[in-house]
Length: 127
Image (cartoon, rainbow, N blue to C red; front, side, top):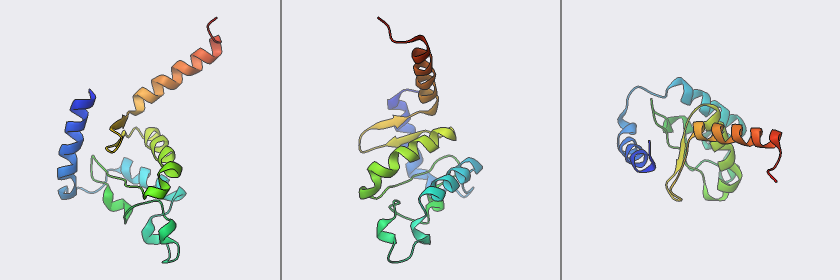
């Protein structure tokens, strides 16, 4: 799927996922557990700690539907938490998007790039 088509799908999901009554898919539940194991949901933080939380809203589990989720990071936490979120999503086969910088990260593409780089390292640099 090209980016133009992917963005169209993303925006259609953003408009409808909140009314989806099926609840989070088990993959999103696992993803949520992995995320909150590293960075707790702001709902579980004390009043003194909540400003240091990485998530922009909570409960974080409510941001996941059956086939779509929206994870928003607080601005100060983006540089620290975003790489972890993207890597963790890829581990679960979940693609991520960042509307502000117009970027879609696709797990399969990342796996192909890693495989290529591993092969490149084994063969050595071209002369």
